Image 1 (cartoon, rainbow, N blue to C red):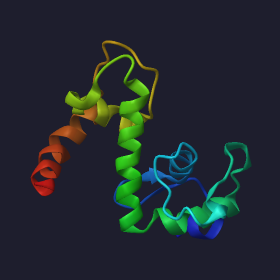
Image 2 (image 1 turned 90 degrees about the horizontal axis):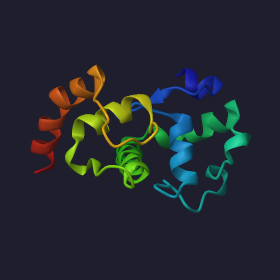
Image 3 (image 1 turned 120 degrees about the vertical axis):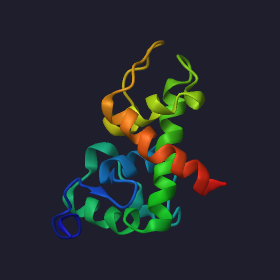
Length: 130
C-alpha cells in the first residue's frame, strides 16, 4: 500500500524485489513487462516516487513478479560469469539475491541468509518446477 501511495523503494510480491531493482532489470533488458509502455524506461538518475508508484503496478502482479525474479537471478549469474559459474552454486545465488549482485570473486562464501534460502526454498522450487 505504501509503495502505491507514496512510491517508496519497497520490496513487492512473492519475489520480494525492490522497485528500483525491477527498474534496473528493465534498463538492462532482462525483463520488461510491457515493452510498448515507454513510461517503464526510467533512467537510473530519474527515478522518483511517482515513477516508483507507476512501476509498482507492474511489479506487484504475480505474472510479472516471478519473471522479474527469474531475470534478477539471471542477471546475478551473468554478472559473475567471468569469475565463477554460479549455475551449480545455488547457495551463492541465494546470498547474492539477498544482498545484491556484489563484487565477483573466485571463492565466495554463502551467507546465513543464502543458506536459509537454499535450505527452505530450493528443493521446494525444484519439485514445483518439475
